[in-house]
Image (cartoon, rainbow, N blue to C red; front, top):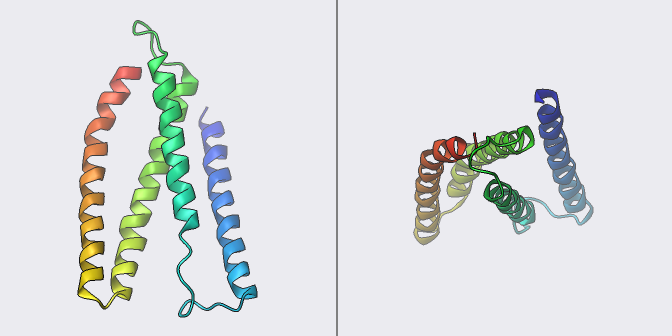
Length: 140
C-alpha cells in the first residue's frame, strides 16, 4: 500500500517537473526572458483544477460508504495521497509563491491584493486542518 502511494507521489512530482521543463524550453524558444514575459500561471490553474477534481472524487466515494463499515483501503489511500499533495501544494505557495510575488511588486495596491490572498490562504488552511480529522473519523 505504501509503495503504491509512493509511486503515485513520485509520478506526480515527475509529471510536474516535465511540465515545468517544457514551459522553460518553450519560453527559451520564444526568446522570452523572465523580465519581459507575463507569468504563465496555467500550471497553477491545472493543479488547482486537479485538486478540486480529486476532492470531488473522494467526496463521491465517501458518500457511497456504508456507515457501519470502515472505508476500503483504496479510499483511505486516496485520502492520504490527496491530503499529502494538498499540504505540499499549500506549503509551496506559502514558502515560494507568495513571498516572491510580493517581492516583485512595487505598487501598494498590488501588494495589498497579494496580502489579501495570503490572508485568505491562511484562513483556508486553518479551516482545512480543522476539518481533516472529522473527515478521517467519518471514513474509518
